[in-house]
Image (cartoon, rainbow, N blue to C red; front, side, top):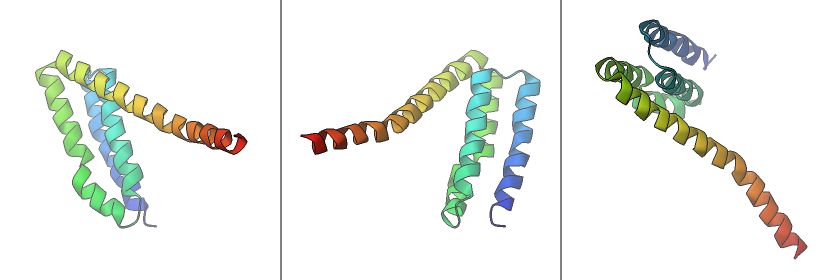
Amino acid sequence: MPWLGDLVGVAASCYILAEASRLGVGRSVLVRMALNVAIEGLLGAIPLLGDVFDAAWKANQRNVRLLAAWLERPAHAERTSLIFVMGLLGLLLAAAMLPIVLLLLVLRWLGA
């Protein structure tokens, strides 16, 4: 099972999330950390390409840096993580809207 190793890696990455939560890290930082793990888990499951992505993305290192930044300056880490999460949600919304806009443009073109 090619994705089994990725699943185990994601489960192990959740330990860092649990420790961050135990330390009282804010929601926006926890969401950002969870997104790092989710991105690595989803894209890492792609055969061959996923291995290259895993080597470059390194969600655990990113999450440890986020945790260290929060420990040093909690308010700043919260603010930058909130901006990141909002930007990511905006991109996801735009990506979800793109097929609808394209469909409407094609229907308009066919009807003209």
